[in-house]
Length: 173
Image 1 (spheres, rainbow, N blue to C red):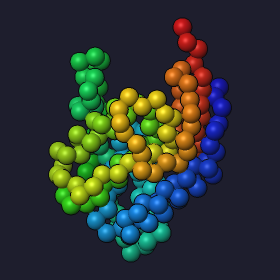
Image 2 (cartoon, helix red, strand yellow):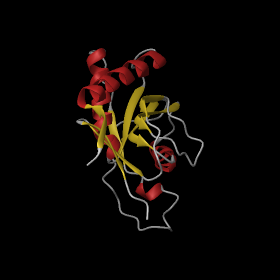
Image 3 (cartoon, one colour):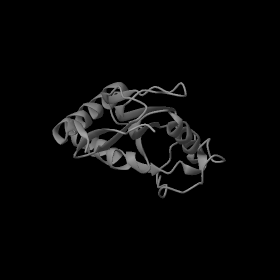
């Protein structure tokens, strides 16, 4: 049993705030695209895209998804299991792509997503939005938009869904 650190209402408010911050930084939604990292970032990308399109109803910000399993730097260390299908049905050239993930930890998944997004074109800029930043980075990656900074132990497990964020301490062996 874990400890809820964000309720469903907290998650909803964080998504709305992140959507506003994205629009403020980009001065609107023109040439903007949202790309969720499969699997954990897909639901969040949908929610952020819907929030942006709700704030600016005239905008139709596209939302896509990317599976990074074939771009990981640990392919030789563990079996490659595609997580889900990539689906980016819009041009990324000359857009600001906001990569979205639920939990940012070591930064290795985001590094893989950066490589993966380049197979679809050359964005003008790439930004990163995460619901939870738990620290413990192994690469120099920093999010542009954060729902909650959550210092954790290396042994903690963090699960983020629309229903809330739960942290569970695992017993080190």
